[in-house]
Length: 268
Image (cartoon, rainbow, N blue to C red):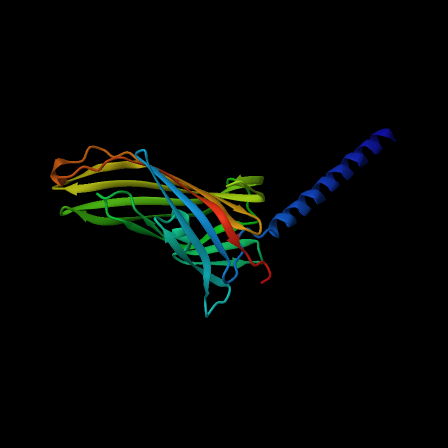
């Protein structure tokens, strides 16, 4: 009888643990990490450090428009003092919408990449990017895409290949930003890998070995939205063929955005 009682006790514990886990998942799926309502707004303090030079700025991001054909799709407007943040620039390029209540958040837009003055800017299209999915866990891939572009530099064709990945980076019980402590924080990570080569006469010359060029880590608090975004960009270029007649300096930039204030309407 004692063995039977022990076995029954173990089974009951397993059932209770399973129910608790299910309840926790339900709680997370109801968390609103992206409050989308017209006129919701966030003010960020932006900082960037490049070659020991520090630049600061301020930015106001607001939900400014609802798609007339699909009222569940929202777009953003930003007002910038001095310079804008990387991720808020991405957000303001397109639209964000939700599926299944608060369980999935999707983004359509683009990522405009600026490396330095010597290389031309380029844009990565972002279509149906999952920013948050309650069914996924830390380490799961939210979105992945690769592609390439070609540009001319001093008359020579330069080919640039990229791969961009969005991933679930886990949850935090709380996080303090600018002296304010936020609870129930979700984080995600964006990795951008790049490589580049130039065709001269009959050969391709590598000017940028494939490498992780930029990493963006975003933090979202329940019922608030984006509270912090950290960006690191590092590029190490190869020796440039003299035919190109210019040099490309290596890149090392650190930047972040920290929430200062927000105005959020959750009754929508």
